[in-house]
Every structure is written in C-alpha cells, then in structure tokens.
Length: 264
Image (cartoon, rainbow, N blue to C red; front, top):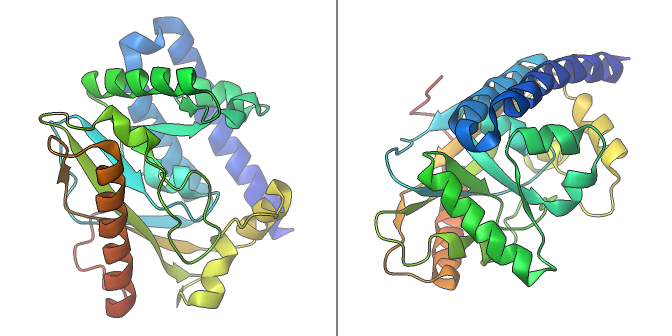
C-alpha cells in the first residue's frame, strides 16, 4: 500500500512538472530556452524528491561561469532526480530512453541529450550538441559508467563524452560523488544501500517497487576539485575524473560522511 501511495505522489510531481516543461519547450523552442528549461527541470527534480521524502545536501562549492562537463557515479534509478534537485544541468542519457512511453517525450522536452554508442556519426553529433549546450550557459551532466552500477562501487568510465571538452581552453570537468547518508533515519551501511541500487538483471518495475518502499532517504552530493581540460585528451580526462571520484568515495567511507559543508 505504501508503494502505491509513493507511486501516486511521484506521478503527480513528475507529470505536473514534465507537462509544464513540455509546453514551454514547444511554445518557445529548445534552442532559445535551454537555461529556463534546465531551471524548470531542477524545480521538477526538487518536487519529486519532496514527494518521495528525499533530502539532498551538497558538500562543496559548485563553480560557475565556465563551460562545464559534470561527471557522476550512477548507482540507481533515482540519480537524475536527486542530482537535478540541486543542479541546473542538461543530462546525457542512453538513446533507448527516447523510446520509452511518457519518459521519452518529457525527456526530449527537458533537453536530454541522447547518446547512441553504437553509431559513430551520432556520437560525433552528440559531442557538438554538448558543446552547444555549454555555450548556451548550461552545464552538461553525464554518467561515464554508461549504465547504473547497481553496486557499492564505481564502474570503469567510458571516455566518449569527454571528447566534448578535451584540450578545450577555459572549460572544466567537475567530478561529483553521490553518497547514501541515511535510509529511514538510520546511517546507511552496505546492506541498506542496496535498496536504492539498480543492478543488472533486475527489471525496471521490480527496482521501482523496491525504491518506492523506502520511507525516507538522505543523500549527499560531494563536489570534487575541478579539472582544467586544456592539457588533456578524452581518455586522460576519463582516468583523472574516475580517480577523483574514487577518492571522494574512499574519503567518504573513512570519515562516515560528516556533512560538514551542508548547503540546503
């Protein structure tokens, strides 16, 4: 019964804000409106987090004023809404999502940049669209693992999206790490964190039912040091970014994530 109530709350927030973004994008045109749409998306992410009783804290300083590619770990299905609740960004997503009912049209309206890793020409086009989005003043967020990790560990990074900023003067890659701080009021541990993971082989419906059963969740976004991109190619950037995110992961585990620099 609780999952049904949570699902209704999610649908209400998702559809209300999604439909609003959809009509804004149709009325004015995405190219003229990318920043406004990104801000509306952030409002929608915050509304969904409130509906599901998810509190999100940012630990660290978010830079601004530069073309920026944000890279993050990707443990589960909630990640885009958790991140968008605190960040004004455009997301890169798998092209399969563009064909999903409801999520596809709303995702396109939100300005999702769809990645087709099987098509080299479309990958080149994606790089151009990422650069256009950054020139429009909107940071782009990508999950370099390419899929949800489904575990308490960062998977190897793919380097494709880093091509958009390789050897680019004045641009930065910003590594961030999502950490499950508390679940239902209790400090998280290896066993309880599995509740939010989406492992391979688990269906979307089963995972959604598992996530909707969580009564409350405290998430932390740890912000790493920016990486200047002008001296590195895409493969080097991928390695450096992964190392920085894994460092954030290790420090978080060792220090039990004190949330010393919370920003509401």
